Image (cartoon, rainbow, N blue to C red):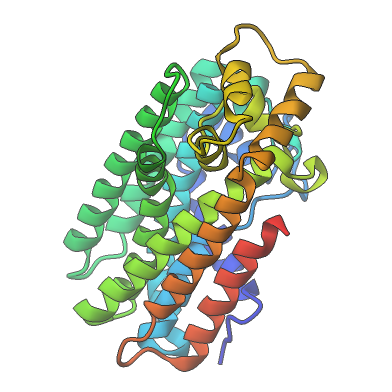
Length: 338
């Protein structure tokens, strides 16, 4: 019997699926994909680099286990691979849009291979996601591909909103939450819903697990936004104050700007100024976000959303051991910023 408690078997199965799918790409694209996933260095030499947390595919397999028992997760591996392909296509494109030079402690794909090639590899991973899902076979494919397609549309909607926020002086917190729901929460909800679907779950179980993933995804974004300001580069793999450098209207920043606090106008002035922010201005902006309550607001929201996500699992027929694993994973995700 394979137990997923340490997620080793899950990660190995997903990694094997990702490698097999990426190997189908033309050699130049396969080389860039291998570098992005952390399997090789820029010259194509195999390395043991950081391939990321694999949070979304693990959620997919745990959701399958929750509805179908210990071995049901194996049926959901193609769905988990598809979810991770979509996630990484979005990461490659996001790095280009945001001009981020580092991911997972290494230069981003576009910095190494150029913008054009990176865009095309992102497109290829998008296509591979649907190919992997379709090859799983069975009567779940129409519903699964439809859900994944809807999620990609939501991701694009969220990314469009995110980029447009950068040129706006004022963004409402409700708009920022809606953007985060589309850009981040939708894919996590898709991950758990696909896992429940491929694990043989009932419609009620699929809905419950999708709700769990969606709420956890929004909590994850709150934490990710905190790390985008105060995260340790040695842990995040990105430069300190990375979101502030890009003048991101992230959740804590938007909460701070709309707080009505006396220091909010100073933060708004820093964000509306032209030119690259100095290290002094970046430190001041971070202090202002905290002083205006943005840091605490995101922490509180993340905790509330995680509790609500866990409560979504109170549905008939879910395996208790898998529910416990999902609950523990949710808690560890939110505590990343502590």
